[in-house]
Image 1 (cartoon, rainbow, N blue to C red):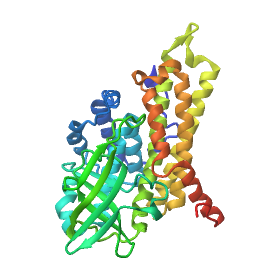
Image 2: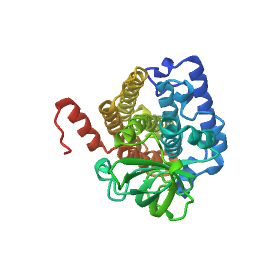
Image 3: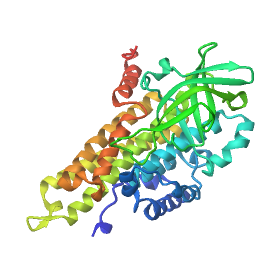
Image 4: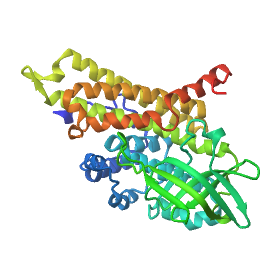
Length: 387
């Protein structure tokens, strides 16, 4: 019965893709259905990352799709589909490809690209993005505490980073530090095995349990000048990457709602109470329609942002509005879905418990809801409420 029902893409936004992109998205769905969806809850329950999946993920050849000529809409829909299957895998993909690999494309020297770019695109090496610190999250732009001191042909790094996705197992990190000489922001390709680096997994998470977030401590870590990103000198360079990743988190919010709707709708047509499917009751239908409306509105907003990106737009306030709006709608959508499943909605056995919990991470990272609203508020009033 479920296969004959309308898609959660109720307004048909996928039809905006080219035929080549639609076919490639079908390949992504096939991969996710075979290699990810059957095991995603098990990985989450054990808080283990499936390293063995990476060669098959690499075979899709989807690293930084826009760099390969695909549209921004396609790139966003790839993230939505990955999130729909497993939020944690989508987060890994974004951290590695859309932050670390994208930084190599944007800021890497020809030597750095020659050494690392192809292997990173092929997932023969993995990367992380080390910006957030134990005492600096939302205010990291002005409060970066990790330092870099030039010493001849090397740099000496000291400080700490927190919530670094892929941080426990990555081969390299794009690490941000403040130059002690002039206060400028530097970016480094940090070999994660260098002496003086301590990596500790963050335990006891209730969301994105498959993602291996780490605390990183740097104690007089020496990095050669050849591993400094020559194209990074101000925090504005960081914002260029964060704007793109913030938009992709909006696409994650879409994917999370697609997943919640998929599970809730299937449950509603299969679960019988009072002698009939619960989907036949008015209250449940109202909840499903509200979920679909939120999902469709979020998808429509993100599709428009993708159009702006194609035209060279999609500035930070627009990215902030998209992230804030879609994640707020997502929070409502997953709560409605969890309610439809009743007690079964709080277990990973029925998927919804994982979907509900993972939504909290999406709501928080790449700028909290509150910080993103203040970015938009500043843009529409000309007055900053932050500082």
